[in-house]
Image (cartoon, rainbow, N blue to C red; front, side):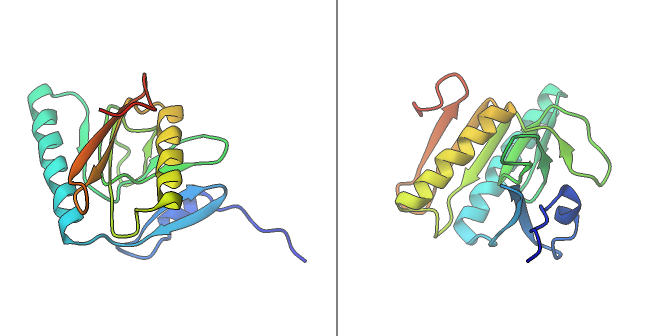
Length: 157
């Protein structure tokens, strides 16, 4: 019986083209593509973040499928649906550190008790890594954006 090898950031670079994944608990967690309405929501958020970037000339806006490398005990990366990052660009490499803002847009399978636990755990990871604001964007059912802040992570606005 052989020991299972932990996935690394190098494995993220080998995810098939157009694929999306995160490193969680030593495993490469593949993420399914999203549908039209959540995809458009992510695009709208990115466009707003890009306008903010141009206005402030501080930080960078990112659309879906950009990797952010972090160093948490059980998570080594994020790939939010839209994000804003104050760190340096690294050419074609993943970004170092968590974004200051992350939007997670719910897809068809992001509902129910298990999904709620996973989303809450992921938000906790974002905050532990240094993210200041996380949006939980629900455009499929409740049509609401819950805004979670690092200072009050259990009390969304």
